[in-house]
Image (tube, rainbow, N blue to C red; front, side, top):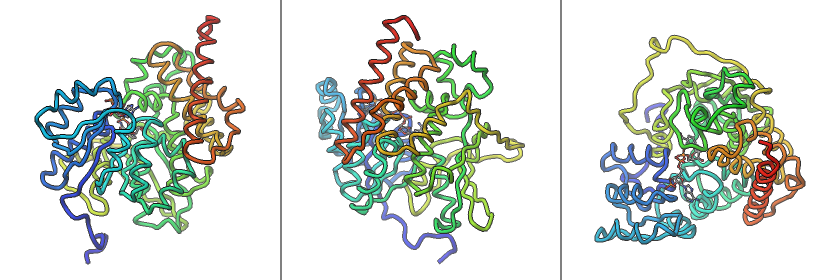
Amino acid sequence: MIPGEPCSGPHWPRRITVLGATGSVGRATLDLVAEQKGRFEVEALTGGRRVRELAALARTFRPRFVALADPAGYAELRELLAGTGIEVAAGEEAVVEAAARPAELVMAAVVGVAGLRPTLAAVRRGALVALANKECLVSAGELFVREVETHDAVLLPVDSEHNAVFQALAGGGRRHLERIVLTASGGPFRTWSAEEMARATPEQALAHPSWRMGAKITVDSATLMNKGLEIIEAHHLFQLDEREIEVVVHPQSVIHGIALFTDGSMLAQMGPPDMRIPIAHALAWPSRLCTSVRRLDLLELGRLDFEPPDPARFPALRLAREALRAGDGAPTVLNAANEVAVAAFLEGRIGFRDIARLVEEALASALACAVPRDIEGVLALDAEARAFTRARIAAAAGSGAS
Ligand SMILES: NC(=O)c1ccc[n+]([C@@H]2O[C@H](COP(=O)([O-])OP(=O)(O)OC[C@H]3O[C@@H](n4cnc5c(N)ncnc54)[C@H](OP(=O)(O)O)[C@@H]3O)[C@@H](O)[C@H]2O)c1
């Protein structure tokens, strides 16, 4: 055996399902599938509301089953796929059914807690789950991890930082891990003053300096809530204490994550900021693909910078750490309030700094002390925290405050 080679690789072609196929991660996944001719077969594809995009992907990738979350798009989807022999369904349950179908690997790339039930359906049949959807792990935490263990499912981290740590752990072992470092680009407002940030528009928040991603995660990157969610995600994925997860701003975004071992060694994973790299790693695990992704040119890069995150301008990071330390329902509430606040910001109904303020208010409410006993309890608490945050937004709009 060649050192570093896994004992056995996947049996090609690998059968996969892509949840959130019409999104940024979903499309990047399918780009790789198209490039890797003959390596993958597609069992099912799902989308949220973009009917035409989903139909076009289905015509290209020929899955057995296609599901759209929005039932209003069912008739159009059926019409667009008429004569293809592809089974079509719509509604939340249809997305769950897509995940439950027999694919060896499921790419979980729905955005938000809407991805929780479908991802769990894949977990509950013991699938390999390539996890992009961090919100389901943030929101359901221990309950989600327990389901993974009970059903012998395998989580393959797709978030670039967690994928980096996952890759670094292959060189050192979890037993000798002391702590990890998650890098953050700093987002579009890294060098902005607090006053400038207060006036930031959705367009400015969506202009990410290094990554091209969906709207919600791009705004999360601008507030640094994304890094906060990633701290909670890392806690569950790698069973680390909150204090063992460090965040460092690294504007070049080429070191994605670092594992620091007990002997003082630091193993970092590097690459250009391109999600196809962690996605390719998960898709081929425990082997690797040969991709056409641009290679990093170190001389062109020249230097690597690191700086601490500014807690005053980016309070979301502190809020996420507090929610993780508080435990119980706090991470569920943090995530739900953030999803509602980000959507309101994108619709121009609140200001940029209101996002963290609303999350802080939700965390200070009695809701954060609730203890969800099961996944249904998590979803009920999520709904309550959403209602709470929507009510705060409506009250502020009514009083003329922002
Ligand atoms: N983008 C990245 O580079 C990146 C990196 C790391 C982690 N992630 C994580 O990966 C996940 C996906 O991010 P993204 O950037 O790919 O998001 P995105 O571009 O907004 O795509 C989200 C996907 O989810 C679908 N969707 C939305 N609401 C849904 C619902 N209620 N039920 C079922 N499907 C629904 C969307 O469908 P329609 O578009 O058809 O409505 C779309 O396919 C997020 O959790 C994010 O944090 C993303």
